[in-house]
Amino acid sequence: MLSRLRNGAARVAEAVAGALDRAGVIDRSRLDETMGLAWPRIVTGFAIMSKNTVDLAVIGYAVGVSAVAGMGFAFAYWQLAKFVSIGLAGGTVSLVSQNYGGEERGRAGLVVKQSLIVAALLVAPIVAGYVLGAERLIALVGGDGAALSAGTTYLAVTAPALAFEFFNMIASRTYAGVGDTRTPMVARAGGAILNVVLTVWLVLGAGLGVFGAGLGTAVSIAAVGLVLAWGMTGRSYLGRGASPVPVGRSGPWFDAGLTRQLLRVSSPLIARRVAEGVVVFPLLWVASSFGQATVAALEVGRRVRALLGSFSWGFSIAASTLVGQRLGAGEEALATAYGRDVISLSAVVYVLASAAVIAAATPIAGVFVDEPAAVSATAAFVVAAAVSALPLGVDGSITGSLRGAGDTRWPFLASMIGLYAFALPVALVGLVTPLGVGGLYAALVAEKLVPAGLNGYRFRSNRWQAVSRQYRPDAGEAEEEVG
Image (cartoon, rainbow, N blue to C red):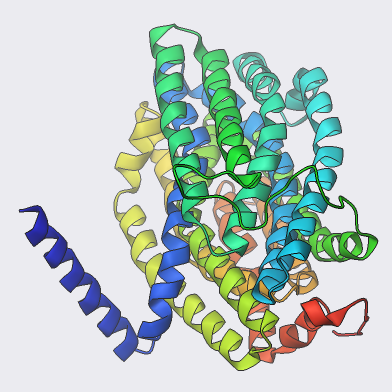
């Protein structure tokens, strides 16, 4: 029976690969490489994004809408800090993949060391500020009453885990940069399972409410960090998973040229991500003007989109790694072909995934809230989130390709335009016109649609290839002006 199932699955996979090739979506030979890198990252993405989503669903069931709204406020601060780590990790994978592809493993390992030092300097003040100022921070964005209490508790309890999350992001991207996305997948998936078990036990079993949800999340993130630290120091997991660019006490820990490159590549990514995180606060303030039920509905929509974004985790990192490695080897035409194919594949996947979520919007909303009015409001945000996930997914593959080249400034500017020239103004218009909550629906779509169009234009221009020449192993410290 098992053999027949495997054979059947293999035949289906072969048929799908052939259909995608014939349709001009992705070359069959590149599909295997892409999916080999992408599917573990997709699983990893679902594992990471599920933490807050599980917390939200369990608290919605056990405590109610006000607590869900409070956790939405806390998630905004958590996400802001996490986006800093994602930006730094994005610069890390760009330099690691190019140096690893250029047979410079020692230099790639030194990039990781620089990243860890920068991460420690960034995360320490963030953790301190969140723990000491949790209540004031939640109140600042509209939290009051039960929502204020829930948000304060969750933020204060989970903030220390950000130190582990910064390390986890850098470790995961380092593995991806050398072509190993399975090791972090196993660690992250294990952490997700641990989080579910702990959250259900602490909230529903021990009756610890929001504190229990936060504690379960913090412990599971720390556990993942400890597991990844083993492999990142060059030790294997039963013969597998040892990083080929290990971090150890021996050897240099600082290189001025590499540090400048890392900061130059990472800074636009960090700025872009921080700007994406900052815009959430006025959106939450707008939502709070319509009541806590709207805040909860918006947060559920954002959680659903984050889960859909897990596909982009895989395709984006596959694009970054494959494009970066081809550029590191000097194969610009092949790098372009890889990028184009991954973008096309992600578009097909997101059309199907978004359609499925739209069809199931009401049952999905019912997982988080139970009052009829709240379910209806939440379902509308789930639909808007699913629509916005399509440009999000395509843009993830485009920016992944650009990031693999070290071209991070353009995506930063594109994101700023989408967020602050389109999404935020549309949401604010809803406060003073009959558009109302519809402004928030439109904002969710605009913030992803506009950058996707601008970054698509950048990819087609091929200017990113010129940018990549600054960061290849043979580039040294040469500087080149590129637009």
